[in-house]
Amino acid sequence: MYSYTLYFKRFTHLSPLTPMRTRNVLSALITASCCLLVSFARGQSPWTPQKGHGYSQLSFNLIGPYQNLYLTGGGIQGLNRKISDHTLQAYAEWGLTDRTALIASVPWKIVKSGEEVNGAVSTLPMASLSAFGNAEIGIRQNFIQKKVVFSGQLLIEGRTARFDAASGLRSGYDAWALVPSLSIGQGTDRLYGYISAGSGIRTNQYSSDYRLNAEGGYKFFKRWWIIAVLSYRGSFKNGTVIIPESNRQTGLYVNDQAFFAYGLKTILEFNAHWGINAAAYGAASGNYVAKAPSLNAGIYYKW
Image (cartoon, rainbow, N blue to C red; front, top):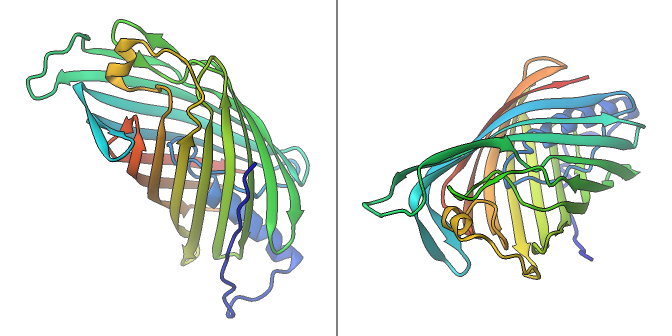
């Protein structure tokens, strides 16, 4: 359904990859490209771990408190109460074969509505909701593993979130989703880049969406990565779900959400197995998404 191309500059001072260096590169790139799967700027790496190897991460994401939402066309929707959306997420991927990886992620959401904004009178109470978000399970299959790496991925997103009608707080979408995507990338032991394209196909009369992501990173010294990210998500606006008024007032996981986001990630590798990462994201535009930065931190283990 979607076509895309990758332009990756070939630096002349970088030597060709030998088979042993290729394994080292792929190990490093798995760390670099999996460092954040909790924010709305999530992409899909084309690299897979080797058979029996894997990657796991525990991360925390902060958004807010915020009092405004982006709307399509540059508009802003003010909220009567400040909203906070925080996520503790466990993520793992494991190499079933050298070219096939199993993927799973489980988010625990902590969403809150705080004080009223600028003297506004809210019909909703100040409240807090702690619950699972939309858990995911899936598979990534590598098709080409040469100088250019090309893969496909298929995720199933569960209808595992909760909604509190009295406060309008929601921990995720009230729908199942099928999320297919394709990605292509290239790299060395110090430099990599990839792009991905896909779609989120939701049930329960929610609109489906289309997704484009680009990511590039460079390793300074021996263990420090700096990574730039661009991400776009648009809605097909083909849903007919009726969002409760209380949920519309908080703007949490409503229909037709969209954004154009940018960000920076950094990874510090302690050794061959352990490391930490951090990221900051902002949205240049959007529809029914927070007008606030997303801050993220995590610790990972790979084997």
